[in-house]
Length: 162
Image 1 (cartoon, rainbow, N blue to C red):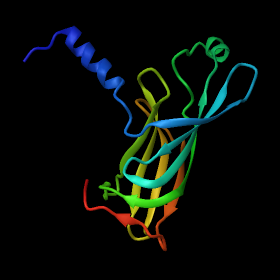
Image 2 (image 1 turned 120 degrees about the vertical axis):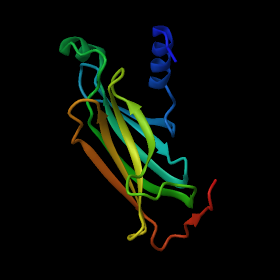
Image 3 (image 1 turned 90 degrees about the vertical axis):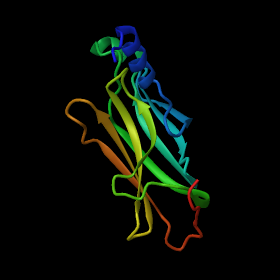
Image 4 (image 1 turned 135 degrees about the vertical axis):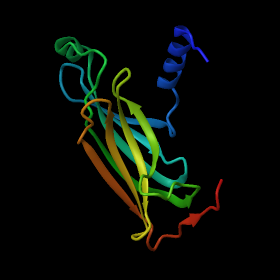
């Protein structure tokens, strides 16, 4: 089967703009300098675990900073995360393997870099682990943050599949 260049380009563009597993609601924006750089704070509700909200922060470069550095299409990979129980916990059909499951993704560059939040269930300690990290094509990234939501002693309800 042969594909034309326009077909391949359209497929690539569509894959770049596919919606993230969970949507985020911006709840804060802190200006950090006169160049227009900001720290964005977003609330992310786990789509498969009701009653858990994660707050993710990341850096958003301003126009002046982008012009000065000559790197127009990319933000730094730095992020932070804090997750808490914000209501009754109802756990849906989540991935149970040690690789976890992607909960949220926010682009940090036009194509190559994203901040990702993954959920991993630690069965031995009855805890949900949320990891925020950068996904980069080259050199990976060692910038990460972690938050946990212990289920021990909670009235968490486990659904049997969805």
